[in-house]
Image 1 (cartoon, protein in one colour):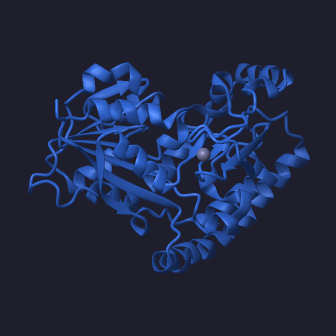
Image 2 (image 1 turned 30 degrees about the horizontal axis):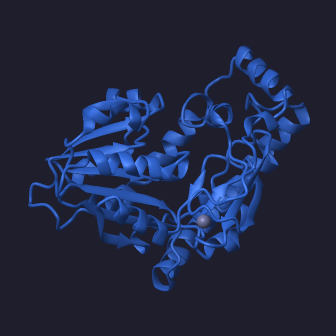
Length: 354
Ligand SMILES: [Zn+2]
């Protein structure tokens, strides 16, 4: 972890002293997806990713099964809870996590197999690309494709500097509508839509900018997975407080069709991200003994530091066994029984009639 300056710690402590209820919008009583009001509580949790203060709720709509954060974070809240996750204090950790997922990027690259000639797509824009780890891996399988990235984080500049991304678009999709219009053979959103405030708005834009016959690839968590029941609030795809919406597959498919995008490939097992038990264990440990230098925590006592040091010396001995359980048993079981923790949809832009 990079060293934390006193100024950063003081800034966090000042913000936390003001209370965290100011980071939320009012709770809503109707589903943001279908508009009906039959809601039920699905999850109550804390920030198990970073250990910042706050309590978060996910509600499920009984009419359409959409799951969403309620009350949802406001813009200040999003800034507060994302800070030091993908960059700053959390940068090295998240970079190492993304670097360890090559097998996943391969599946994402190969989702277009059979839809292009031997040369593959000419160009590919990855929205919410982060550092561009996907682009870096995907080049092995699609050596003739140009990979560009769009992201609002500073990681995008790092991805460009590493040579992983060709053209970069810093900011939101809204900022680059004309620049990306009719330009790409493929646009992807891998674990992006669940983070945005209004997924249908982003779908509107992409449906508008894709040229006729071009492709959109979407991958999102699938809360219908039975693993969400087994792991409870330690289930990684809940990812609170970052995930704002968890979209059931039928809702996404309908939303794509409404926008002139025809789903041509749907993958479940291929999109499963193994590592549930290992992740749940890491989250549990991190909550039991958070990193003592985390700037949002009050100054740690010597006893707390000692506990952290001892726990993180002993507890990782269980990692190999959990990892084996995840990849050798649970992953194949999911492939056999279904219930993967994510799904992937490839859709093709219809030919416009006007
Ligand atoms: Zn609904």
